[in-house]
Length: 365
Picture: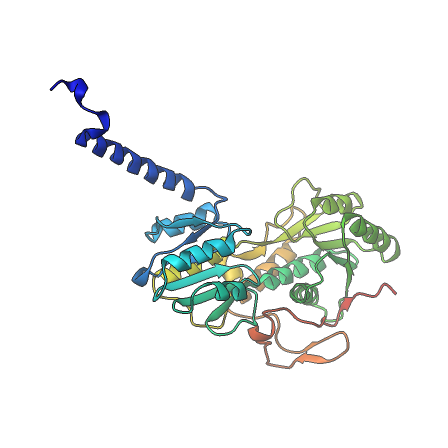
């Protein structure tokens, strides 16, 4: 028999070689996928390994945590549009007696619980939804701690103590942040007031800045909107600036600091606990400045040493467990919200609040 008579694909050795090459290529492809910063994925490993099924944009640090815990397989791409389809696919291939741990954004718990079979054990870690029942655990970030620190900075650096808070977020959760900021400004004076204005867009924000600059003589602004043009405009009006979406660039010495949130440490913490059998049975999981998930950015170059020291002191107290929503607090209608020696429980704040602390001034007149 001549060598030319042998079919290429009939050769056993060659076929095995091709299969090996394909397997290697598949592994390399998987490594490429899991290393992408913007890869959204669901992760499943059954039984004792207790993997997570996560709906979240995975960053490099989260992926590294997954790899460190030995999770390198069964990745399923998930986007908002195909979330249901992906979950059904997982549920259908793991029909019963499996453990799912789902980490997701605000409001997804009900949708997921209807999709995954009741024969599986499902634990939810859902952001900021205290109304979920059963085995759902709510996690959230204590951004209000960072907002409090921002208030300390604002009042410390404002020369005339005329401060304006602008936001486009009318939610009860945002009211929690606004209240915390105002309490921060009241650290040395419980009579301190902060002007509050809700706006819908950048032009509306500029109009409010102009009005309050001309009529109330504000010299400090905190704005919670995702638009750096507002900061640049306030800077041009010679107003001190605090942002709420991470560090701002290209501003003058008027820039004081910014509030930031970082979800990666939250995801890493939950993933680690789940994979090591340490998943918390608490109904509410809060992550604050002690976890590195929120805080304020480096203070501006002109921030005084006195303000810096006061901020450091407040941060140390928070890291030791002191909550800012404690002791005597009144709302704008003079109702007592919290009494001496009391602390408002997390269960009453997880979805935000419906009241403003005394000191919030949302009436121009």
